Length: 575
Image 1 (cartoon, rainbow, N blue to C red):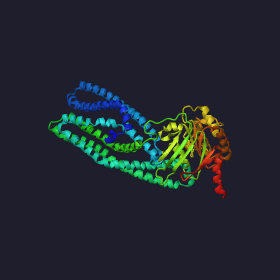
Image 2: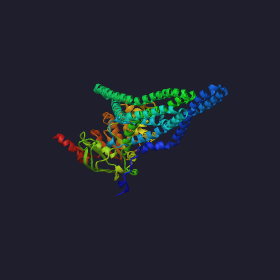
Image 3: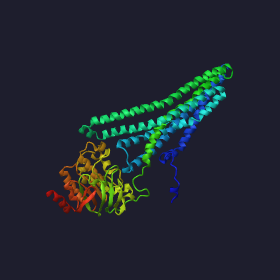
Image 4: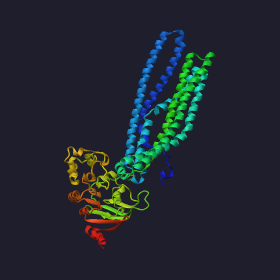
């Protein structure tokens, strides 16, 4: 038994994906801390300046001393201004660095997420990514400044005690009271923050669903349904946000009131001490100023606690995603090179998350390099699932899915998909130009290869005739193009780079017969010598294959040469 199984390593309070960028900015935070220390010292000097003027300059009419003190104060004000500007710059600079590093890590993790572990809707996931702003705001704001200011409460109270003696009891009592109120409201803030975030994600989910399917919402008459969902989500989120703001306001308002009480209390108590000649007028003014300064950091801390609950809730949500295993092997992944194109399924079983029955069960077949095979079957027979397993979008529950004798779970997903051209059932295009949608920033695919793939897919026929056609900017998901045009661009994207294996799932379902026929003729020459797995219900596309695998309920019903299987299919119909 290994040491790891005997000794459980305690989980870190903050995950490495968050701590690493913060550690990288330690030097910047030290600069912020040093600047904050000097700023606090300068604040104390201002109070001492006031006391000196009232106790020394005014009674003696010492104008020359006032000039000297004013020059000194002017120098302090200048340095205070410079240090505050530097502190703000360093805090923002560190925040920008952390925002960039954390944002990159979280986005890469999201792209590498295993689809069977994905939780919630697209809108909820987008809303959770938006919560990165809560983390950024927390670490890029006055958080560091507030933390550095807290120890100066003791120094400020010590100075009040030295100058005013008994008057220190007034701010000394207010400080623990402010802390107590903040501590008492914290549990309610935790609950409300988690509830508010959950309802905010629900609202985001409804919004993204409505915008993404706006055309379908309009044509299907679903607008009233979506409106009711939106209004319900907005109402729930507004109510929770209102309660959260009210609770957070208690701590902040009490800290502000405590500052006023501290100032007034010092003045009231100080009057009696002046009468007893235990305190001077200048000392009273200085103590009243310092009493307010002692409470001021606590007001910042009260605001910080209110934001801390939101930040912790966002952190927990994002950290759950960061803990999820990424797709690909846990160890070092294998990279595909020199792909021959052999595909093998060995007794594969798979069930979608939450589905009552398996999509495929005990599936086994082999496709030799260069062979062209079609998967046929009724809707829901598991054909598209085969393509998803081959592309390692989901891991099989049992059995093996192999390319050239290697289990796809051992392969680097990026390397696998670089060698498998996929034109899936839904032709989803990205926001950007047609060129970007075909090339996708892949190395080795230049304009010549892009145009070659576009000519084969038929994209060049409608893009090559437009000025700057390939630089035409597409809207979300290719809105503005016909279904056939979107499919054509998706096919060009799959063909670019000449991958050894091609997977096509209903590639021409939105095309007219003439366009489809011309595409088939071009694909027949293009795919010669390369492995093709074709999923279709359209008979004309079967010209591209030599073999058909007929599926039903996740199992193979028939497997053989194209013409023989087609005869088996047609025989029951004839009967």
